[in-house]
Amino acid sequence: MFRPALHSGTWYPSDKNEIEKYMQPSEKREEAFAVVCPHAGWIYSGKIAGKVFSHVQPSPLYIVIGPNHRGRGAPVSVSPEGTWQTPLGDLDVDEETASSIISLSKCAKSDASAHAQEHSLEVQMPFIKLSNPSAKIVPICMYDYSPQTCADLGKSIARAISGGKRGQRPLIVASSDMSHYIPALDAKKADNMAIEKIIALDPEGLMRTVENNGISMCGSGPDAVALWAAKELGASKARLLDYSTSGDVTGDNNEVVGYAGLIIT
Image (cartoon, rainbow, N blue to C red):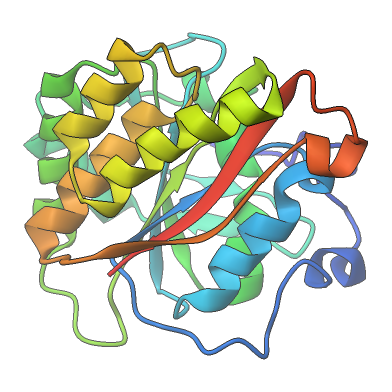
């Protein structure tokens, strides 16, 4: 499978110099198990996404989990092989790890069709390529957010990537935007409830909070998967790096989308 960079030049820049402007190379980097990173057009969320990738140590392997916005393919779709194009050069799928996750999980399926148009993973790829040009990836998109599926996938990912040496730890990237199309004050209130559960490393609590409060974040499933995996791998804390809304860019706070960047260590 060759996955072209379909959204280059629209959702994010196609020029290397423009891409580099979103990074903060002077920041001190820390080794992390996972991050939560927004996936909107970079004009809205690129600053937070770049900040996240600038704060963590580069990894040889990125497990990138995002929502399946179009509902195509399997409920949990793993891109099993091939190459993903970025404006900075291609990224190869780690076929061995992808195969291991599929074999360990009850829900993950080998499926390239779900990834054909999906943007939530593609917008992370230039940051990965810039962080480590030789990195490999395992792209996973999902629309089954049941607690059982999230726990199964998270634990399966942890088993597939456990044993990495210090400095060679795989990084799990949960691609997630927060509340959608509500007033900014309401979005911040709702998003804070979800963020508190992520900081508490509580995937079950996150899913309950999102459901019980009708929080319209599109990446609660990937976030829960990342939390399950990180906890299995030994994570002990998480922190919010930054938060903003689309209203901070457009000036319209009547209908916003929220963006959060978190690091799990």
